[in-house]
Length: 467
Image 1: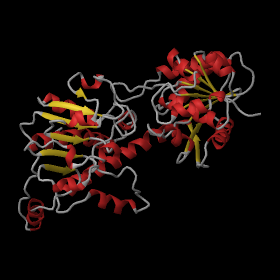
Image 2: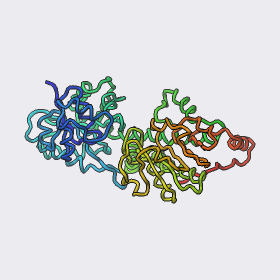
Image 3: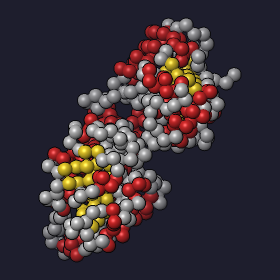
Image 4: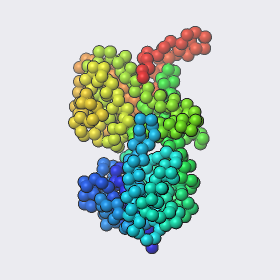
């Protein structure tokens, strides 16, 4: 008999998972406490903004429905994925409050259900949370014992907003933390049927999987911070090119090219908090995590470097345009966005800041405290700007040409954080095109190397870092 699935929590990840599983021909019941999300899914619409999700849900609506009842979702499924928020606290740990509530509701439903049922936690937690907090709640509320009539697994997803469905169906690998072999084996079989690419599966204890999840993201953030250090170095040598250096490093199979593109720092809802959680967990166990702390410090300093560069280049700047507010292209998520932080700091410095992002429509996002004007178009954003900061490598920005920047006899400084724009902009004498991570091949950079090899004091860069 074909297994049936339920997904508790219809946010970006949960709704995308539910739709992806339904697209593979399985019946899925989504559960959420938000009536609007239920209404949208049952109408064949996406409850969240995620590219392609709306069409996917509509196309496979015969296999997907939603309810506000956890009991209904559990009783009409064999495997339940729990995808609820686990927000960070002030120490960097993850709260399991919402997960505990979900496990309690699931347990009460399982008390009246016959047969074997597997509960899979997908939300990120610290090691020990599944075994020592959530599994006991499930046993207490269901009256059943984990490993007998109830299976428990921890299986986080490694996906990126903007490509959640594709990432879920075609993962690099599958991670399963299992309470026991029976639960892990059944979930392994489920993934083999759901995913499309035959990805390898790593099965391990609950605690090892919980650690692996935050360790993977912490490692990626370290790689990003290193790439940004390379970008800073390349700017100080004649003809320095961070992309050329990164391409060379990426050819080594021990390193790889992914996440080695120097520019701005990392943001979003996962990388910053997982790195912080890794450091917190290590500290609680008495294990130094200096690398994690240094990565976080470097990432926080990245915005300061850009703002210092802007204010150094145009000390009397009256208007700055920030292109890109979401933490990455193809997303409307502002959490942890370096573009947002750049806009805020420039506004705090007394600069009029106008920002534009193709997917950010709100007139005054809360993260900007009303200090930054959100333009309706890229042209409105650029009009009259003395400084333009390209904060995300959005394809829409790559189409800009020198004619799109108003000159009026003034030089427009364009800080291109991801080297997105046409390099020929530098040929326009009215545009100072600063491409982060590239040296300018000038006498200044050459003198630094000459001073270094002559044993002299190396001149300071033209702009200072700022935290």
